[in-house]
Image (cartoon, helix red, strand yellow):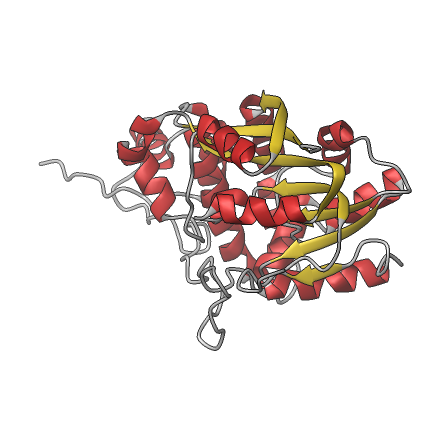
Length: 333
């Protein structure tokens, strides 16, 4: 009488391989099990080799944090900030690095005489890169107090506390931007805002005459996407509530807010490539963390980040959402 073999826990290396190659980890594990013949008495995969229990929440320890104004509780804690920089590079917490941010920002024609605001500044890596490369004065705005604190320290260390400062963005303030700017970069930020028109009106009011706004973000591929189970599952598991619109809807909003849309590029394929290229080396990051005393707990955070970016990349590959770049100019009346 044969006894059904109990599925082994999925090794970390296999799960990471599945994530960055776009496969289902459980399916890969089932295939591997079918191809492996073991004696009945052979022990199962040990806890040491198994995927670590995901005890570290993506949102961090939020028990003592108060909700941010206009947005959910700050989803960034020190562990997640540390892991983000291990994955994406010092001062960055998303796809791309210095070369990428310089390339997508060339449409803004930045010069040392200009001032610029960056909404969704993260840890300030993009702002410091643009300030260093183009000489522009960049003020980064961020709704995560944790990112502002960590990013401000990085700017100070780099000697750019004045050239590329970070400041907390309180959306309940009637005038959250304290000055006029020549340029604005709104980086994966509008998707977090429900009333996009209200924000864009305030941004337009803070732009100087002939100012330019560069927007990068996720968009719905079509209205039917909202009812798609894959999209709903992705949206429900994001660390912050997203409010996505079709790019045509945003273009209409921009026109109503006093902008003229000059460029609309679909960067989805390139964006997925950036995600894949970075996460292909995640196993090395995990190995390094295991080798460092007191750092093994960060492996749980790496796993959560891998899951997060794998879901985003999957939706982009399947065409349910797109990642786009829009350049809009303030109309002169």
